[in-house]
Length: 200
Image (cartoon, rainbow, N blue to C red; front, top):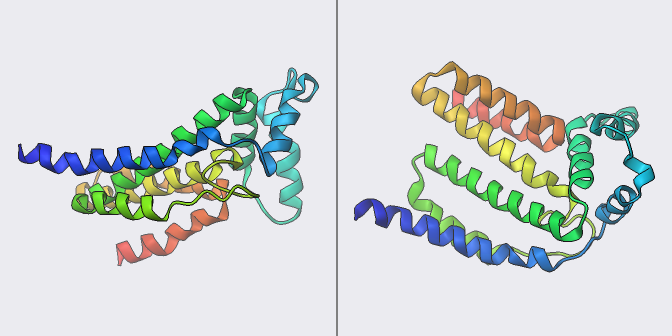
């Protein structure tokens, strides 16, 4: 019974956030999604081309300007090559939103803050806003920021677990997720001071 009471706020909170995220299904394409979706709707754009071949031009263009985030372009090309309808694309965005939330639950769990998960859900549900214009992370941009958060949270959680249990695979996995986060966006570097503070 005590275990059930501990899990109930987590499940209830997650269901609340799922309901709050449900408007994602009612949104349409805008910002970069509109162009990328239309490009892939044309058979000429990606016919007989691999994900790497499609991503390479964008990677080189941004690298020339001093920015190297190749995984973001691999993700972009994979998503729009795979999810050919708006309905399927929005379902994918919804799922990665939920996975990002669950990965943050994992961070709270390994930090022994399980009791705060329900409170976090209430706070998050209260401040969640959909800004249907350029760059709304909840509903667009091929789920890049959700995937970034998943990598960040998993890296952080595994780093904490490594210091608790001293399993090398946890440290290696943490480093891999950290590298992936940095190769999606520069925001991944936010973990550097976090790791430093954790070690010291």
